[in-house]
Image 1: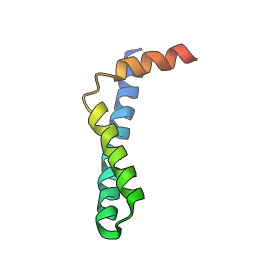
Image 2 (image 1 turned 180 degrees about the vertical axis):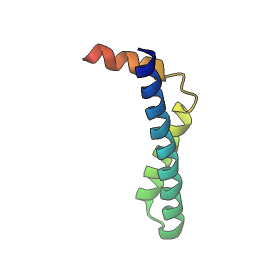
Image 3 (image 1 turned 30 degrees about the horizontal axis):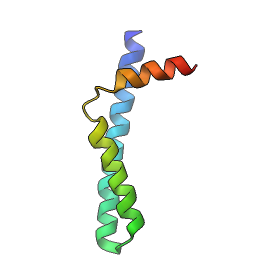
Length: 69
């Protein structure tokens, strides 16, 4: 059980880092191309990273995913 929790926590951490990288890249594309789409997507990706980076919501997410099965 602990291995499953640790594995899911590691996967979520990697997803959050990926969101940060994609968000920064989209903001860079916005600064180069002035596309509002890139600004919106980049802001949303960075927002996901900001709100979930402390990992305090992960136990709740894992518990909710178990209850849906």
